[in-house]
Length: 162
Image: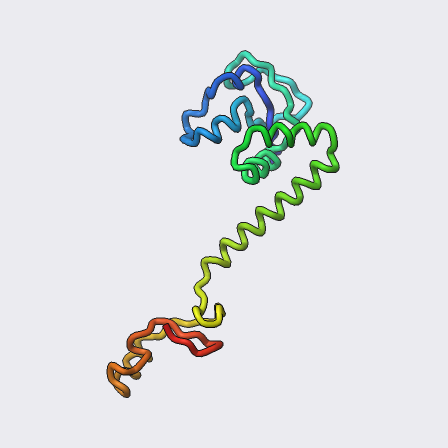
């Protein structure tokens, strides 16, 4: 797979050219002038979009650009500060990018955990749905007073039903 690089075009920076596909105005402003290209970092070319500007290396890879976008919520000043940091102190930049990656991974994993149903009594995720068979048996034995008839879930840890 070819590595994607982020190049900057000063001409495109003055417009939101070729961003018709994007409905997010904040992202348009964030990425204005930046292009993702699959050419080596040392090659200097004329911008393939405006055909006028000379592409300048932004120092960022596509992955770094995406991380900065996600962490900063498309904040252009933060992007420019991170580019300057990479230029001035590569070790600190790499440290921050590593921190940002782990933050994003934690947020992603917490979203997955939050979608798991939990017992309202003990917060356990060791729960099961009360089957129609159990409801029918409970209803036949105890009538409408059976708790299984009215409830839908059962906690295997504390026994609570809701």
